Image (cartoon, rainbow, N blue to C red; front, top):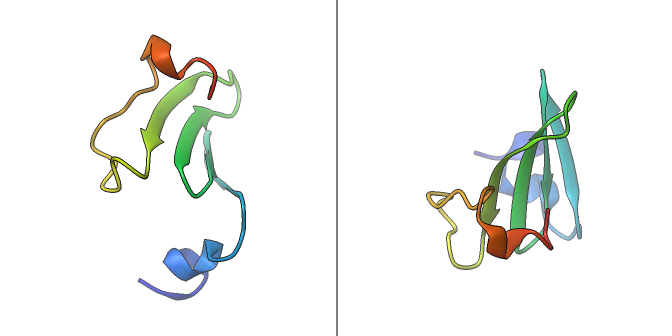
Length: 68
């Protein structure tokens, strides 16, 4: 993938905001948070350093409360 939607799209930026229908995503170099735009409920939270493939959704993990 390349261009505006590929990994290069956020290269050099400290944070990236993306919106798609009812969801929004904030991504930093270490974390990706997906939430419902209307309710602000956190749907997905990934620790990108330890989980680069985004397989371990930690949105409901009490240990991540400070990130949310």
